[in-house]
Length: 337
Image (cartoon, rainbow, N blue to C red; front, side, top):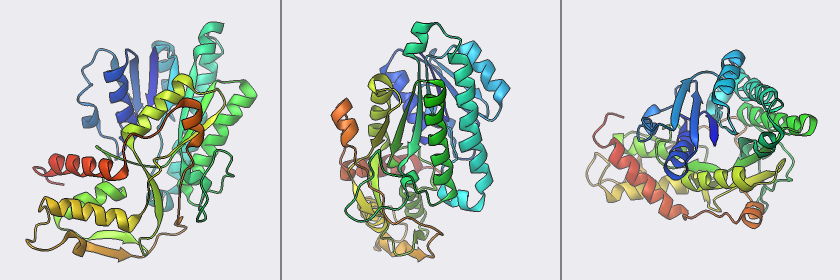
């Protein structure tokens, strides 16, 4: 099967491509604009594989993407290309609208025009999988969980742009019968994540002996999902999920931000990574002004994907975080961060 992955040089996209090359016989075409958070090094282990092809292109370039479709003849699309950092969306919202909304509309229109000309059997096997976030649901009250039926209530320009893209995907399914599936995931972590996100940021700050910025009081709660568990779920959904359906993917690992930072500091203290001997990495924590519109809690109810597709995460957060800290420590210890 020929599979296109948009945003395949990003954190989740690259993990997906590594999985597909190493565990399936599919041919993979990676389309990525290579913005600041992209990292082709994350694909170095598969880049020379004959089943892997890379195109340096922007999903906003309608003509170029259309030509790629005609040449590659895909059977499935994993659409991950997106601007994804909330802080940057607050500072520069229009770039998020362009990529996440207009870019997704481009992908849907190109895909539909390609799909409608396929033979009936090929149309039936085709899938467009849109990967989204739990942030579209907004702030969550204590005791509740995000379900697939939870109304959208996005708080940031990033989450609003992703909510808009979700609605576009559903519109193309309802209006044009395009065969789509949607997944909304909780906070991912793992190897090769760009160090602007909480976990890799904390690790790199500690290793450099720099202050660790923590928004507000640090009591914001997130549900943490290891990226490799996420990838298992994505492949299960595109392979066996029901068309037109949405599946929430969560790790069932609710932690406050400050608890996550403390755990990372303690794990790195075991390695004596803090440059000042005899001091705890926790002393580097610095509480800073909270960002505008900061949601307090996210937590996913993943019972649907567990019931329908028999998926559940393999790692506890404690196991996954230790693996992740070990990976970053070994990756960065001989490099300038």
